[in-house]
Picture (cartoon, rainbow, N blue to C red):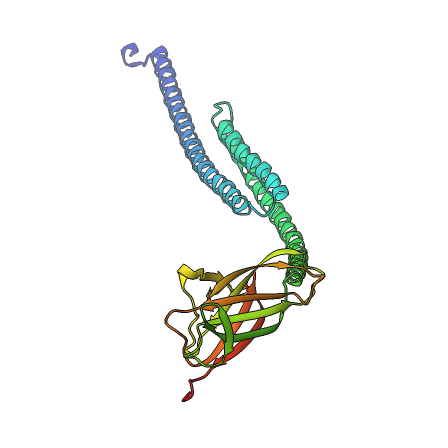
Length: 317
């Protein structure tokens, strides 16, 4: 009968072991759950950190582009005037330093990505604020410069007008010193017996042309030697000119056009003697054509007197 009875101690030990096993299983489940949760949280944190870093890099690109764009805008505005250029150069240096300083800040390992991101966004807002400020300053400068430029143009036009007036007055003064030839008498001369001269109006009989004139009194002109150019134009419209006899060319006052002259005269101008006569002669070996000859006198390119003469065909006798 005793052989069939169960041992109470054996049953109690089995219960204890079972309880321990269950507790160990529960502990392992909890440990695994904790490790899984920790790993999940770590992965989530790593993903979030990666996103923050990507956002930081994107914001850095935006920041640098805004800095570069603003610098380029300021550089394109250089050259308006020295004062504005000086201010713009300071602004450009400040922007360059801002960009470099933040690049060094991002390189610091003790800075958190989130903190860098917040600071960078603030810097971007600061650049945008500076852009509005600089654009307003440039607008004010351009408006101020436009007013000054308009005033300068008005003053320059006024100055140029006065300078033109001065030049015109100087020309008038210079022109006032130019002499005036009057009583111009031009005629043909026939030489008889080798020395005796006789006035003639016949082309075949003319050995030379003679031009005589007086100089009107000019109180602005100084007395003394003056150069007067004699220009004789023949009936065919050409100037009588032979280089070996002293002919040459000169420029007409005003137009600057070049013209030939027949002979150069050196006259001793005496304003106290208005009756003094000045004469010039022009011989030609090949004779003279019939027709009208024009006589012009020039000083310093200015026409100071004009006259004419006519040589006719010879008669039967």
